[in-house]
Image (tube, rainbow, N blue to C red; front, side, top):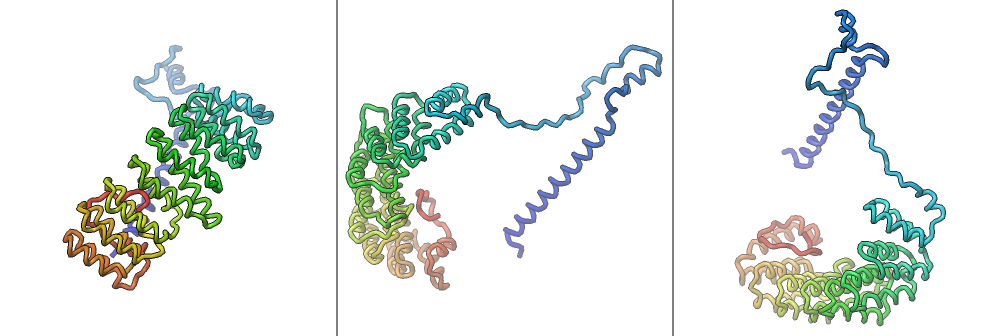
Amino acid sequence: MTSRPSIKVALAGLLLLLVAVGVVLWRGTARSDDAARPPPGTPGPSATTAGASGSGAPVAAAPGARPPPREQIPMPGCWDGLAALDRDATLDSLHAAVAAAIQSRDTALVAYLQERLTELVGNDPDRALQLVTWAMKSAPPEPAIYLEALKAAPAVRHPRVTEKLVAVAEDKSLAAPDRASALDALETQHRFTPETRGRLKAIALDDSADSAAWMAARTLGRVMKEDYTRTGTYAPYWKDLLDIGTTSEDTAVRLLALEMPSYSDPLLDSDSIDVLAKVMRTDKERDVREMAAFRLAVTEDPQKALAAFRSAFDGEQDVCVRWAFLRFAVRAAGADALPLVEEFARKDPRLRQDYLDFKALYATGTTDFARIWLGKKEHHDCVVEEGAPH
């Protein structure tokens, strides 16, 4: 039997062949047209015919006739004075150039100037603080340009710059998008002090912070990943995120706070299992209960995680959440979860085929969950949340 990848390769080859033939035919036609066209200064057919007939009047072109095709080569954009600006660039000159580029809606030039601002700021905290000042005094889209430029510069990690950005994020007199942009600029920090984590956590738990609350949770998670990659430290950040995920009034903030460890996948400690078990049993939002189940899939105590799934199952009526309990129990404990999965299938016949699928897959000797998941058929019309295995 011919496999689907082979068919795709064959079709791709056929398509390339057809394109090649088309190019050859087009070039041949173009050369024929060029050969048929008289050289400059040579009388055309109309003039020759006119001379042969003895009439000096020009013969008009046939109605509807199209001129021969002409090749159009796109030219790169050119900015007048850019070389001089580059050579003598200062923060002030780039600031003025950004405003002019925005006014002319030249997005390519704006992107280039943003990169030049990052280069010019470098490790200089004073220049970095100047970008923050401009961001707070300008109208959109300038604030985002200056803060994105700062985010990529090493100076963003200078204590004075970090403090300024946190202060901007805390300022309730500013619009939520401006506060969120300041938080976004903090995402390239290598670590947060306990004080800074506490201040960001307070923003995330502020019901009036709107988009800044969501961004505060994300920033904590992004820096947790960075610190975990560099030093193996995640527990202090995760404690803050877990508090946010269980106490915020905003569903999107709770969901994001529980999701953020997905990007570094640390092994969760036993105490975290107790908190997440409560979330699975009590949170009013289906998405949050599913995310708590997903979070339990990577833990240092798989058997305790299985007990948490068992305790939450009976009180849950949504088949999609029950399906989440089942599949993440398998991810947490592998084949050791099959007795629990069989129990779930007895209690809810809608899950019976899932039990049979997993039982058959593990019977092949495969143990890696990623490979198991590739062989698993889908039997439920449930939207899989971002970060969960597909």
